Image (cartoon, rainbow, N blue to C red; front, side, top):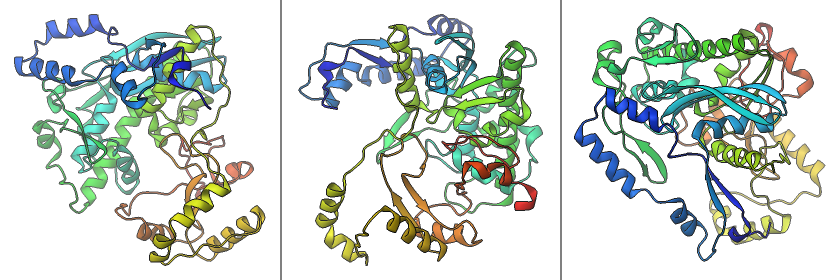
Length: 446
């Protein structure tokens, strides 16, 4: 855009150190932390860079005059879903791991303003529940929860009763509670770090969880049926807590519109149940429910507070794009690597020829890498940077998995379907442009 950091008036950050101070103090009084934990937290805070230091590193040599506006973590998530939804009035829900000493928050967006009505505080967290069980199932990396969601359909919900001891919906009001015997995060500092460019974190669950569920799976070891059954049970209990919160919110608010965000809003299977199992019929899920979306939500919230909010484009296609000349230059520069891979470059005369050629190859059972327009923003490939295959072939999943290294065989692929045919194939009908919901396939189409 030609803009520099010096052109920016406000820098919004999706955390506010002042938020939750009373809750932190009250928790510390009730649960006196160990000296070792206090020292660990102090050392970690000293290592943390300030916003100014981050900006200086990211934009060297660019001075800035902007005001830095801290936005409470869950307000940022709520804003990331409410403002681009297009709804004037909607219930807003954020369910996450933790942020600013809370794991969930809810409220109502009306006329461009969001009022936060309640929160679930530390140490209770639906996100930590799912993260801990993801680790327990042998998927140790930050963000591996989608693997548990993908593994769940292969199992049976045999461990639901046991897991209800681990997390329970609150009997009155909105929320949930963890049985902290099964976790470590409330009594020990859980270190979050970076390894080879990916975030990593310590074990969240305690040994009591193994006493309840049996031995944890070692990463990389064979997946047994009991692991699949546990994954199905984890998903079932998560859905139970998630949907109970949403139904409780529906009972307190006179609107059929709901917007959701936060890391737990990435659970597209649970999101697909909202319209069928709650009174909400208009549901908007933030395309990037996790903290990247919270960054944009912080900007929305700060702009709304300043009275200068305009949501110019409701689209996830916000990343870089490249001209034909740039692509051709890159191909020329990579000729030796292309030849070494056994590939050739062929220029087709126009877009129709390209589409027809790709369709013919897909129909012939080949796998096509599709690259067009701007890069998708968020966690999912939405057609601009996608791997395409023929869904009519029963062996296509195995074909694609054989071409993608280190991809587990159980992980699913998403179908792409014309909007007018959704109801013919799925048990529910609705717009799902961002892969944010999973709908059951009609029985006759299975």
